[in-house]
Image (tube, rainbow, N blue to C red; front, side, top):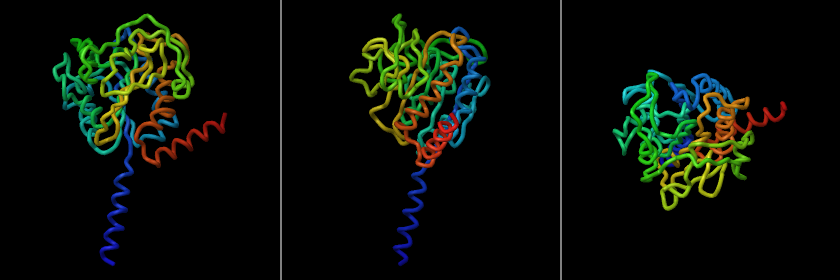
Length: 288
């Protein structure tokens, strides 16, 4: 009887341990102003964090801005480190398109083992909007020395990786139409070069394409899971647009739709969170 009770308690405790929460952090700038304005970032962050589906999926949502992101002792760096290898898949949204030193010290001072790389390799998610991912920081309102193309190349571990302009227009793929129903064609100036991911440790899901080798938005999914799940990196609407020409700004709405429609399905979210998301979406549809 004692053995039976012990087994039951162990099973219950083990089962409870497996049901983990998910946390979300924004980095909201300051921005590289030629790519997205501080005002646009603030509005996009508000649109994402106030979205009913997003709120249902995450246990906590925090927003880090200027002064909170400099170096390993900054609040954002500590958040990143604490959420690395903690057994749950967490998300960082680089809403301003820049990557501060608390995540990746510039210029490429830690090409391997930066806080953001460790975070991703343990199975967490980074979503970047606007500027070339991992290219530089604007912390303190001053442009940092550039990581340049090596920033992304180092985090992805793909030598020579770049997001150079290919002068193309982008249309949603079948997956993209389901993931981001509000998507409209646009011209990306910092697209994914899909041929660079061949024979890499990543599978790339293109949400909009110009041709078979050029995408934006897209999400790379690691082939090597970590303690927290499967690492993912999304880069979306990487184009210089301080204010989006159409209203509402797709960059906020689109990220929220991507989280609700694609990440919730393909990421590692607990059953309770998925049930809350389904309830939230059901309520929204009923009210339309």
